[in-house]
Image 1 (cartoon, rainbow over the protein chains, first blue to last red):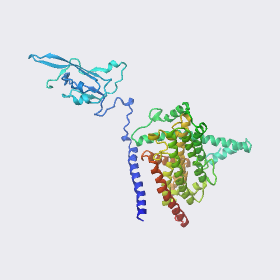
Image 2: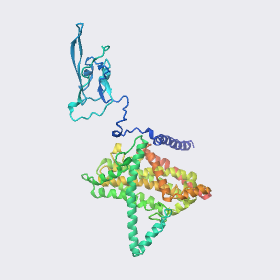
Image 3: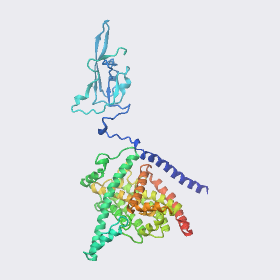
Image 4: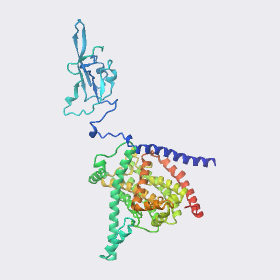
Length: 159
Length: 362
């Protein structure tokens, strides 16, 4: 008798859990605002990628054309497939001291896997991940970029 | 030519009389056969295409997607484009297949919906066949489909196909029992196996309301077993794409694959149409007791819209099952059938018989 009751209860419990599952999918089908699909080429004007999206490595510059890169080369060491080449040069400061600064921060977008290791390794937060993702070009040489802008210099307070 | 959308027998009668005026009786019969066949073939092809589109859209909305959007407005022409693509594809025949059975199987699978659809009443007077064992005919003929599935799996010379076909065989043979028994439950209430009589019986109230508790139980059992019969999720382990690539139709391409695909969707329609006919009153409008005004408004909607409205409701329900529930294992499927559906069904028949004997139905 107890087995029979358990059997009948199990049927209703099963139906109840199935109904719970259907409630969840039913919740989504009657709410079109939960749709996450982006109609991409049509909405490129308004498309906003999410904050953590990794499109490319960029070096943010401020309005005075200054960046935070000291040319230490840690990003180059941390890059797993050699997408980054740091070329530094030595300058002589007015007080006679020698200082190593960045000459060219070369970034091979064609090889980059967007692993984010360079951004995490950078001691002075000079690098960041950009949101741009439309990188198609006709010539692969165009994928080799120099991240520090011409004429830019390192910010005063960055060591 | 008098024609009313409320009674299609006026249309069929007019066509018959028009033909009889010009042809001999034998010629009339032959032309009518060809006409009915053509209408059903065109209906099945178009409805199958539409159902594929509907399924993709419904599935997309369940999963927070948009579904096909590119071909035509809202992707409406997507399935037509797919169909043209399938027509133009090469028919690949793997090495060392059993050639005769391999080529025969898709036709056996596709012939089943053609046979079953002939007894389904779409509206008043819109039924190809109406004979006194209609429901029995449907249950008998729909079991033929499993032969096609088994042949396809066996002749393909492929392990995936064979495993899929064997699973499908075990599953369909089991669930046929439940479908048959739940239909018998309703036949007890209707007192007839003739489809037109069953629909006419429901003019005073749909069977799901008339038969109350046992009818609702039978309806649930029918929906579960019907989903399993059509090899759809959560019972789609015959083609379980994550483990068996495509199950029994792995080795088929082009139009032969399209036959399997089309048969699956037309079977879905047939299960929904059967549920509509047996439980939801066929093409009968919805009536509430003595609310004359309300009933008059309901009568105003043509029967064909009632039929298709109910069919789409049931199809949506079955699609809802498919895109909600995870796939069952083979032992779980057989447990569900033999340990749950079958005993419930047998008790349900007893209950229904008792209620009909005592006259406790409405």
